[in-house]
Length: 275
Length: 282
Ligand SMILES: Nc1ncnc2c1ncn2[C@@H]1O[C@H](COP(=O)(O)OP(=O)(O)OP(=O)(O)O)[C@@H](O)[C@H]1O
Ligand SMILES: [Mg+2]
Image (cartoon, rainbow over all chains, first blue to last red; front, side, top):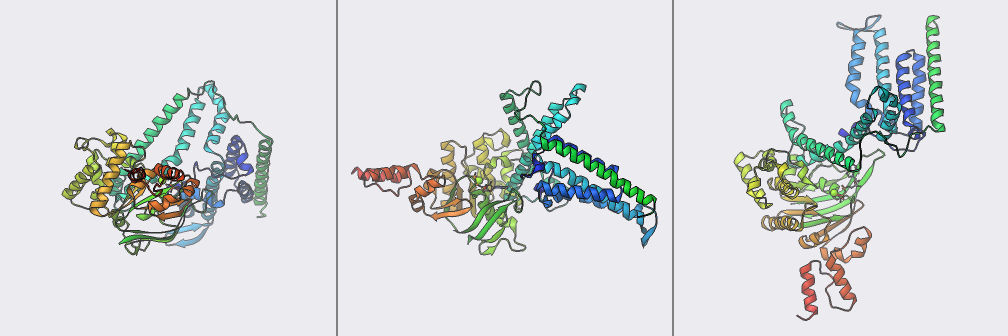
């Protein structure tokens, strides 16, 4: 139930994707997302699909796991599809009472759905193959230039990594407290909205208390070990680009070129009426 | 009237990289009125097993019968089951949430739909049973010490007056006196009300002293299921799975090895003392 959340859920496996430098994966995700929005011909989407499938295969993460992230946006997805389907004007295909479905509507709806799904799956690959710590390390290093304009990059990265680290712990804790209260006859499922909100109190109070206790303990432990922020702090495993990382950047460039090409073909085909 | 477990398997996170087969083909009969100890190394599946007894976890395969009825049956009343099989979790003090201790103990019976006066009477009795002084009853649970919180949490389950009381390491982190107090109270409860008690513990001394039957878990399987004497006879095998017999078992075996007529089956200090005195001819 709560465990279905993929965000920040690392899936351990032994693959090239897992070993890549987190900065490469961040850049790759960014490139992929931008490409989804920049190019919108069918040909370009075929290329994007191939790239996505290839990366999923290489990452050795079961596709089931990628799909799990989609559950959380299923409502958004449906709303998007329905709105596009019925509200876009154009050549009418089907007419049901006062509602019309147009050719353009179907096209846009399918397009938007694919775009959203790819967006989630694409970013899931990054979070599934990168440990949260590694990810924030990558972010910290990639964003370091912002230090110059007084953005506390290190502190933000530290907060992020702690927050990410705590998600599974808090989920486990929630599970435990829920069970303990259910053993005392608590009921988290039935009743109207107000009743249900009330029933959550025995879950939320211990959860908050435990979260604060943990935060307190952690702060104390960090201080006891001499943590004083990013100033002069070095890394045990500094991020260094390896050969495979440079190759990955090349692959990304190639991907962009292919997308660009595919997009051109798409446009040319449309302009000359070949499609 | 009993609990019966048949071919129970449980797998955490089935079908993922985190898959963990926590219980393997467990078969047990837990008749009414027994005082049962469950031991096993860390991660052997003790907590997983006991969460099946009140239906908090549903076996991946297999069945659990309570008083002859399969609890996985369609429409089985889980809430009622949970009032009959009271489960005190490991570190139960983290489940406290009410404004004061007394209201927290009332939470369970209140959920059973009992009238306010019965609820309060039960809460008072449960709090007395666990030995929590009256001056603490109106305090916030968070003002109590760790051991006092533990008692309050145990009272929260006792107030539901279960027929089967399951305790997951109720004495972890308590001082020796607090530990004996709580276990003595539980034994008294068992003797007076004839309820079934299932005690998960890492302390062989506690187990030897209170229980009449020991279930040893090893890697999700039941390894031994017998009286303490029989189980501790296998102390070499217990050591191999990271457990041990009570200290006196070792002492008695050492004495026997040196030619004494010591009773090697003694499992408690009292029994050992009696046997040694007999050897000395007193
Ligand atoms: N929520 C969970 N998700 C996944 N695996 C779990 C979960 N809870 C327990 N496990 C795994 O199942 C196995 C059995 O765990 P369990 O908590 O039943 O052990 P235990 O005998 O109670 O140990 P302990 O003496 O430390 O309390 C362990 O290997 C544990 O890692
Ligand atoms: Mg346990």
